[in-house]
Image 1 (cartoon, each protein chain N blue to C red):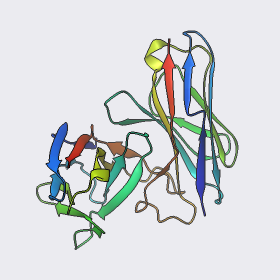
Image 2 (spheres, chains in turn purple, green):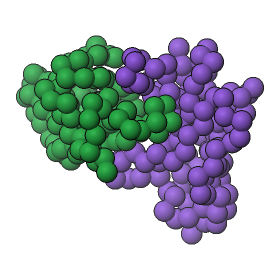
Image 3 (spheres, rainbow over the protein chains, first blue to last red):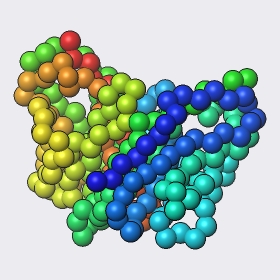
Image 4 (cartoon, one colour):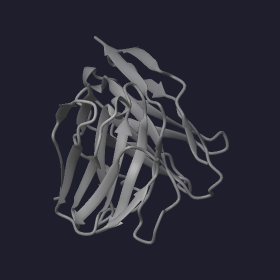
Length: 119
Length: 116
């Protein structure tokens, strides 16, 4: 079974500092994908970044980068130059095996990390 | 462009009352649709998914049911709500012209359900 572990329930960071949110995963599938989502207080889930298990390079999207260490089964999210608007819950998720030919996929989520950016 | 609509945004219902939450997707055809539930301060749990009209798969046995009467419509229902049904319900879609496995899901704005 697939499992995502986020060990940091909460983090407090000063504005403009970089922050790393930890995520470790467990799977026996050789092909998998890892996602990070941001959930502000409004509740919506915002897709941030994706890393495929066969991707050679770490994914980057603007201020977000994913520190993918396959041997350690970790996929930490790095946010550079944090902003007050980054305060939110952050979820790491793993794509399960493709369910059907249509490509339906199950995402398994971690418990999340609440990030607070202090001015 | 593709959009996903979910309503209502908030709902307070008494124990034993019925439930109907609706989700619709625009701008794509034959999407894969999902219902997730998020308990307070917790991660998301997949409840149901659907790959086509009338095709519903349940992940967790529970007091809820789902239906897909039209290609881009997904409904979450209950005949009698329990206190434990309280939570934040999110609808999502994947597929269409999106890159399977890469773009993941697009989520609706969610429904906050409180059963009293």
